[in-house]
Length: 572
Ligand SMILES: [Zn+2]
Image 1: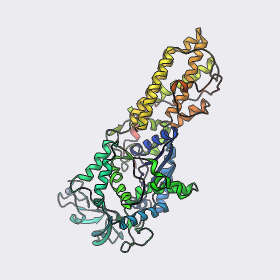
Image 2: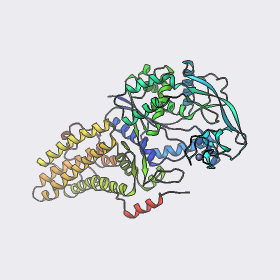
Image 3: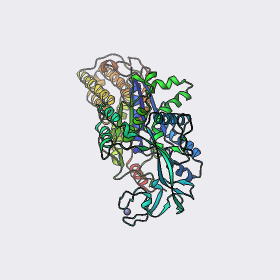
Image 4: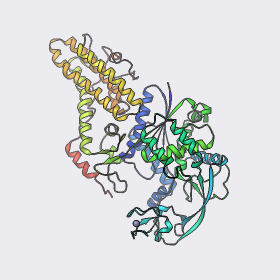
């Protein structure tokens, strides 16, 4: 038995996430966590809402709530949706927690002690009307290059020229529109990533099993241009972790907070501490997952994230951990994803284009989405959601193949033998061939799940379902029953054991349907199958079951057309 620590990239607090966000980190992380638990490993699965930064402040200002209230409300909403999708986090924390405040300040203090923090005085735009410094992207004005009137302080989106806010003609605050701006001096802390560059480089080189998508992104940031740059880790904002050096004040940094990207990954650790607190456990309980001097030496740590998050997880967060010179656990494997697009374009939160997590659950149960999203995960390239494909996949894989198999075999047994496994008879060569095929396929499925090859795992699982259907079709117990009821009984027994096997193997993908199948079959022993021949005799003659209700309803053409229209974009 191994110990596996799994973290999903933290969803940002300002709004409901869309299906592309879901399949880019939380959902595949859940698949892996469920699988590892089912294999008997000890799993700690952590996620949290990422709550700091300017977008949270602005979203709260829009709704008129204090930012802390806004975050508390949105955390509760996201938490409910996570439950709706059956994301099996051991803890769903909040980066605004007291734990994260203290731990973030602790890391900053250690980094300063070890010479990895530099204090830099820079010029920044202050808005009197907003009573705050403005981040570059919150300053608008006319582009000096092309004359576009709504250029942002970091870049003109019309001509793509990179800009400094001071380049803009007639600059104004993007928040209030005020032109009462002033360039002021302000001091910030920089994490000296450049001083840790060789250490990070060597560490990445030692990760020989990482996917190319992950290492190529990290290497690009390490070596392109001038190489890894130092990074500002503080901001002039109100909402965030106040800048402190451990538990001490930080002279000259009063009123400033850490940059959201500095404190967010630290929340992986803090959320595990929150988990211990929530369960009335001591610090040792969470430290054994994170401190190599306190038991985490044998933990395997896997992170899941979209490709845009890779630089922070391969460079900045490791720099924070290494620079602390404390024995914190570094990540062992990063599973990163490309993007899921929506019906010929991109998901857009601002235009309401695409299906969001709340919409999805209002249309169909979680398993339908889980199956489609995971079996089409954007692993090696971007992938695309479209309604025809979704309808086909649900109707074929879930309803026609798996659902139909379960329904046929249980109903046939009920009508000919009653709701208990029948006795007697022998299955023939066809069954032997099926068992051999399932043995090979199940072991291949395990290997793909172990390697987090999600599409390949889904393909294998589908083939496992198909094999049972084909067996039933060709063995035809309904015909055999007319001349040889004993032989038909043996086939039915095998078929009902297949229902149990399918439920166990499918649990990480479709946990609700799996539970329905296992409950209907009244299965006590839900342990992962060893040899398939043995697993298919787990339910003995005389074992009672209940014929389950329809597992998966088909998606009708009218619904598909209706939904495609409804989510095409520009919702209020
Ligand atoms: Zn321009």
